[in-house]
Each structure stands twice: as C-alpha cells, then as structure tokens.
Image (cartoon, rainbow, N blue to C red):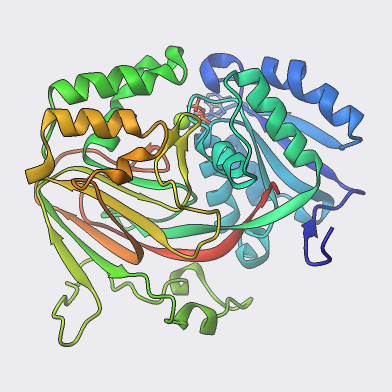
Length: 367
Ligand code: ADP
Ligand code: MG
C-alpha cells in the first residue's frame, strides 16, 4: 500500500446501524446471511445496533464517544446515511466528527452511497442485492478510507443541512418523492413512478443561479476548517437566502439560467441509486457539484423518456437537450408555491434553496 492511504483502526470495532424498516424490511436478514460470514473471515470487528425509530441513529451519533470506534457502518438505504452524516455535523466537535469513516451496506431501496463507492473502485455493481451487499462488506473490511465531497444546503425554512448525495427538483424529485408509496417494490419503485411521470410530465417554473467551478480559484484551500469554525461559517460563496445574488457579468462570477425546467439535478456522487448513473464523470472527491437540467424547449415526452431510461448507464449526458456543468455553488428559486424538492432523497419545504460544495470533507470506507 502507498504510505498516504488512510486506514481505519484494526484494534477498534465499527459501529453498525441496521434499520429493520430498510429495504422493504430485508436489511437485517441481508446482514446476517451475507455480511457476518465475510467479516468474521476477514477478522473485521464490529458491533450491531438495531435502530428502534426514525432518528435513532442520528440521536445515537450525537452523544457517541467517537474515539472508541473505527467507523460507522450503515445497513439501510441512503436515508439512514443522511441521518448519521447530519448527526455528526450537529455535534460541538463536528470538525473532528465528520472525519469518522462511514461505510454503507446497501440494504435499502435507494443505495446511491454504496453504489458510488463501488463505482469509484472501478468494479461493476452486482445485479443481486445479496452480491451487492457482499461487495460492500469486502470493501469495508479492507480498512481503507477515502475522502468525499458534500454540500452545505440552506432551505427556505431557515434550516442548514448537509448533503452527501443530491438535490432533486422537477421530474427527479417527483419520481423520488411519489414513489415512496411503492416502497415494497424495492428498487423497481423508481421505474414505476418514472413511467407515470413521462406520460404526464410536470413543468417547474423559476430560475437557477450558479457559480461555475473554476479550478484556479483557491478560496477553498485558503479557508481551512479549524476547531473554532462553526457550521454557519462553512461556506465561502453564499449570501443569506433572502438577499438577491448579482449575476451582472461585469461585477459577478454568478450566472443565471431561466426556467421553466422539466428536470433538474445537482449531485456530488456518480450514482443516484444502485441502478442509476446520474453523473458519469463524477468521482467521490472532484471538488465540485454537477448541475444538470432540461429546459422547457427540450422537454418533450420522448426526450424525458430517453433521459430517464439512459440514467441506468449515464448515457443521458450525450443528449444535447440535457445540459450540465460543474458548479461550486447554486441557488434554486422556484416561482410557484408548491412542488417537490428533495435533499438526498428526503423531501424538504418548497421554496428557495441554495448550496455550496464542501470539497473532501467526508470520509468513507472504500478503495
Ligand atoms: P430505504 O432506502 O429502504 O428507504 P432508508 O435508509 O432510506 O432505507 O430508511 C428509511 C427511513 O427509515 C429513514 O428515514 C430512517 O430514518 C427510518 N428508520 C430508521 N430506523 C427505523 C425504525 N426502526 N423504524 C422505522 N423507521 C426507521
Ligand atoms: Mg430512503
């Protein structure tokens, strides 16, 4: 191994959260039948906590003595990863806490974090849930740790949250949100809802402001996080959400894209679920968010169908009606009063929302 590779501590145990409600109720069985054996052979030590309610893992990591554990593993979908990540950010020692290595055993219906980590290691993702879980368990047992980008997000109700995955608006948000009722279908639920949405597409009015990603801009490197930095001081480019952003090219680097849109997605990872490559070029820590969208003039049923179908292999970026760009920060300003906006698959209040990339701030178990 190269000397600069970071490893989890072999003399400590990993804390494993198993969500009994995750993945149509299969999470516990997936771990017992597919992970326990792999980890005992690899001599990977761990302790399991079965979550008792929504929010349990978040509460748990808020008061955890982090020095006792090698990392935190989530056996559920992306919803529980989101809970744990935001629990770590809400601690007084968040600057250290966010460096806790996070592993993902894909036992939910949406497992984008595990899929993005496996894609990063250049392996094809196994077709069956069982094999996908084993793939992830093996990666976790290598003890290797990788940095990954996140985003700090402000929502219209004054909340500040941390996203490891995605901001969804328009058709993607509609599909993700409305497919909750098909939970028992597992991954298929996204497809069922997507077909309905192509037949009756909804148009979202408003605009998106964005700050293009510029590799020569070193503001992020200059603003190192110290133990005094608060989560309110984490961003460098955002204004309070109620202050307009100047997009005058003479004085500002910010730009504006006028809607309406049918499709808007902003991601920091390559996968949006185990069978969706939403952002083919994205690595875990490239230092930017990828903004992609379809404007009204490209929003025919045929184009939407082609896009949603091509999400399975990431070929949608080859269509000229799918526009995309790397950004450092963004602000979505909807014109209507109701619609769907999702952060990491969780619905948030509808209204203006902004975010900025936090390069390499997280640590995950992968290689
Ligand atoms: P899935 O991909 O199957 O939806 P998630 O990880 O997204 O899996 O989990 C769904 C939700 O279940 C999360 O929002 C989490 O907070 C919640 N949850 C965690 N533990 C429990 C529990 N014991 N009972 C009910 N819900 C739970
Ligand atoms: Mg979920």
